Structures are given as structure tokens and as C-alpha cells.
Image (cartoon, rainbow, N blue to C red; front, side, top):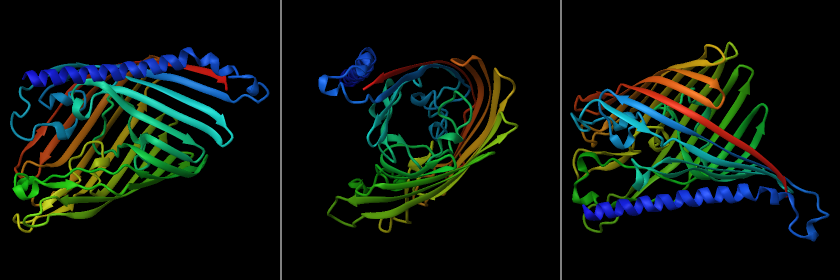
Length: 423
């Protein structure tokens, strides 16, 4: 217990240090922005200045949530079907009240003219702890991305996902079936104009595995992922007067190596692939319909809330092999504007896995998410949101299902400051 407490203190200190460093970096940039207008020395005095545009932006987001049933408390502010109980009273007791600020966000955006075109950068972080800091309020990088002309590099939205498919809500973990991935990538955008966009990217590879009922077998304990080929993603976004249509594609390699030199060699590889078709349709000028259908194999890591990419297939340990799990998902939401200050969203989403026969009976099979809300915006920098959210988890073969109804109140305070200078 003492060791765990000590480690927790170290994690908090490290998080605090990272947050302080990021804050200091922004402060230095802001306090020295006027210096951008001055030449560094006389040799620059006769050169034409380059325009520098900067914007610091973000919001303070506070959640107040009443969870009628039970879910993983580490994800209390993220209504995820995968985090509902897989068996009775896994996260008991029912009925919990939560307060949170982890979705609070700060960002810095720049736009600088260069001989090769506009250089655009985006650095953004929130407080949603992940990895070893999951469940905590901790410094968490969302975007660290730069773009020069048609080329981009860094961490940002994957071309496979459609960021515009998310409905109008302050519940920021939203539809479980939506394609969702912020990934480190090298991107090329050969087409970008008023009619549409075409993007292609090589992304950091990744994937997870569910070894199911064979997870404790000694032969599988030394099987490790081998990620040596980047994921390939692409999208085409076509604009129309009534909205848009977007088609995304994904191709990846799922590979694993058996490091145990004794007995059967369980090494293997499978191809992961998928397609994501989405659309935004404007109705009556102010309303919008969001639609998305996605299908693929081994692409669960690119979905907002889904389990493993790879499962185990076989009737015994001697013939077991890894397989890419097929997945289907859907998103359908309607945004309605009542007037200038009030709006609502209603909709439904699901993600469904075709499980392999080697997965455990309580493995995740299907997740469902439904939302209905009302938003009040007295002015553009202050938004209130009250919503009812319903989630459901269905297991593979043990007959278990769990639902997670909740009421959620959100309040968001926006801030933004544009800065200009010459370089």
C-alpha cells in the first residue's frame, strides 16, 4: 500500500510538472508576442515582414452526473458501454453522483506565412488522464500537429474518422459507434478546395488482443504484438449545397510474435481493414442530420468505444489462432434549433462485434448509446446542457446485459484571444 501511495504521489507530481511546463510555455509566447513585430537585427530590417496569427482558446467544462445504475468509476464522465459491468455488481453499488472538470481544454493555434506557403500549427491539451493516469485529472495531449501546404505531421484526427458526425452536445464522449482516433501521422492532402478534400496518411500502428478463455494458458503468455508496419488511412470529403458525404478507408497489419521457443509457435498476422461512410445533411437551414455506417475487421481501436481488434479462434489450445474481429457500427443523430438560444439533440448509436469462439462468455458483443438533451446558450461563451443518456452492454454468450441510464448537466465557459504580429 505504501509503495502504491508513493507511486501515486510521484504520478501527481509528474502531472503537475507537465501542466506547469505547458502553462509556462503559453505564458512565454503570449508575453513576448510583441517581439514578433520587431526585427532580430538590422539584417532583417529591409526584408518584408511575415504575418503571424496566433490564437489561444479553450473552455472550462464542468459536469454534474447522476448515474442511476453502475459503471467503472474511472470513466464516470464517459458513458461507455464497454465500461458497464460485465457481470452482476462488478461496479456496485447502484446510484452515484459525480462532479468533474476533466474535459476542460486549452489550445494554441498559429498561422505563419512562409516561402512555401502557410505554416499552421495546433497544440491542445485537456485534463482527461489516460494510460497509467486513467481515472485521474491529469495533463493529456489531444493535438500536437503542424501543416505546411499539402503536408502535415504530428498528432491529430485520423483521416479515417469524420469529426463532423458528432452531434451538438456537451457530453464529449458521445456516440459509441463513431469512428474516433487522434493518432501520430504523416499526412498528404493533394485536394482541398470548396468542392471537397482528399487526404492520405501513414499512422502510428496499434491494436489490442482478447485471448479469451485461453488467456491463462502458459503457451500464450509470451505472445506479444509486433508493430512494424504503419496503418494506412484515407478519406474523401465531398461538399454539396445540402451538406456533405465522406468516405474513409483503413488498412493495417495485425501481427504478433510468440517469444516462447518451446512447443507450438503461436506467431501470426492478419490484415485489418474497414470503410467509414458518413454524411451531414442540413435541414431547414438550422437543423442537421448526422449519419454514419462503418464496417471492417480488426479496426476496433479506431472506434469511439469498442474492445479488442483480435480474438482467439479454435476448439483447443493446440489449434488456437488469432483472428481479426469483424465489427459493424452506426450513428444517427438529429440537431434541432428551437430559437437563437435553445437547441436539442436526439439520436442513437451502436457498435456490434462478431465474436470468435475462443472469447470468454462475458466478452463484449454489443454496445448501444442514446442521447436526448436541451441546450441553452445565453451568449456564445456560456452554454448549459441538460441531457438524458442511456447506454447498454450485451455480452457474447452468457446471456448477460447491463444498462446505464444517467442524467448529466454540463456547463461550458469558452475563452479565446487572437494575437497578431509581424515576423
